[in-house]
Image (cartoon, one colour):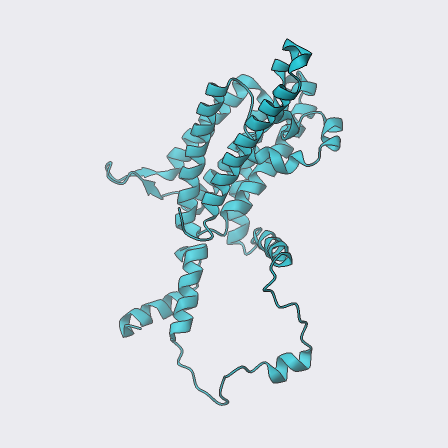
Amino acid sequence: MGQPGNALFALFAANIVGFFLILLSRVFYLYGHQTQGMEILDFDAIHWFAVPANLTQLSQTPWTLLTFMFSQGGGEPFSLMFTMLSTMLWLWTFGFIMQDLSGNKLIFPIYIYGSLLGAVFYLVAVNGIPSTGNGINGSYLFGSQMGTAAIAAAVTTLSPNYRIFKNIGKGIPVWILTGLYILINLIVAFSLTGAKSFAILGGATAGFLFIILLRRGTDGSVWMHSFYNWISNLFNPNKNNKINTTKEKVFYNTGNRKPFSKTANVTQERIDQILDKISQQGYHFLTDEEKSILKRASEEEL
């Protein structure tokens, strides 16, 4: 949990912060409008952060497309706390498995893709299917269920035979856990509003497609990490902003390297690079050459 760059912990913390921010927003609103009478008790701050089903209202609150996936609200405080606890346990379970399989690189992108595609499915269903469009002006989408469903589907697609609780027989395959999670959420969502059940399916679809495209050579997380690094560098005073010319790069960027030096194929630096890749992405993403280098290094005791 305390490991630097732990994407799962950062995602978990973002949901917790969003949860308490919404609770505090409601408290401050009720405190500031307590002279208006009993009608303010129906106010819920989640409406500031959730995606509205009404497209006109959505055009007036476009930021909700980013905030809704880290928001949880609605209902009584004790019921809300129980719901938040259960959703975070599911998120941590599937996120931990994803972290074990692929490192930290894919967790946030899959969660974001799943939440956004879930929102698209929700909006299409609530506006395009009459049976799910009842009360469209009072319907909102929020929560981490869509992103969690995406991570669950991605884990199952990436390694369907991954087993948990290995001390129970031969263990429980992760696809069973994924099916149970999606089934429970579909039942709960359909009992409340049919449109949110479409959102759960949209999230699961995003996770499945992400891994399929990744296996075919298209990594949807690259641009997200590049954008994040660009934003981080804007506020990094230690970043060297000097732009070197081609001449400087080719002829003067030699450092302390000696000319005509010969370097062994298996070096400590190369091994460290491979170990860093395992930490960030997981052993499954190593190339055959990198696996061969690790094997040779272990034999030579480097």
